[in-house]
Image (cartoon, rainbow, N blue to C red; front, side, top):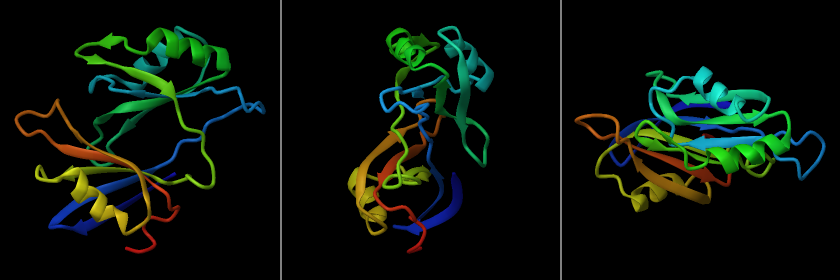
Amino acid sequence: MSNDSSCYGNGYQGELDLMAEECKDHGDDNARTNLIVNYLPQNMTQDELRSLFGSIGEVESAKLIRDKVAGHSLGYGFVNYVDHKDAERAINTLNGLRLQSKTIKVSYARPSSDSIKDANLYVSGLPKTMTQKDLEQLFGRYGRIITSRVLVDQVSVPQKELYSVLTVSCRNIYAGS
């Protein structure tokens, strides 16, 4: 699911992208088929993502996550395999693979549940002065922050854009805004 809004606070306006991905288990709690792939090259396409992971086994779906406004890759995506054994093999084979100037990280995506559904926030356009503490103060009023990271876009030259991924423990982050 996704939702777009603007956030005003500490003198900054940024776009929020609320996103949740579901893990399919095909009826078996131990059958984990959905993977998250981080640190993808900016110019990688969704077809290339599918092809890379398709070399391991049958891919049910592959999704490269893109900025909703600008359309550029956010450097991560999701791959869902038909068979959980292929997902495990993909982690063992592709995690740590060097693609162009990036080393990708492949791991299981967190399963969706009612308690965390719609709780992952992607925030872009942060001011360069934004600290981890500032970020947590800004978004902490909407719910308990489970995890947060301030990241730097290493590709944008000369400006290095700050962005963040937060996991918040509430379902309706926009209810209070």
